[in-house]
Length: 95
Image (cartoon, rainbow, N blue to C red):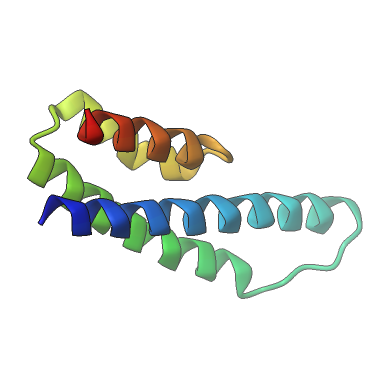
């Protein structure tokens, strides 16, 4: 059961990380060059909501404490941090 939750979390962590990097690039282009992709913010919001649900599900099943849970939930908001969090969570569970 935990293995399936971990695998879902790993996949969404990577997707959220990649979308957040692309969103950061899009925001930079928007404020420097002018053109924007109007639906990109909604895409990131949707992906982050899915990330929150799957991360919370995994944290609940693995009995992470409140601090650990909060840390992995916030990891989807900072570029590159979701990749680090995914590795950390995987190591915590596989040990």
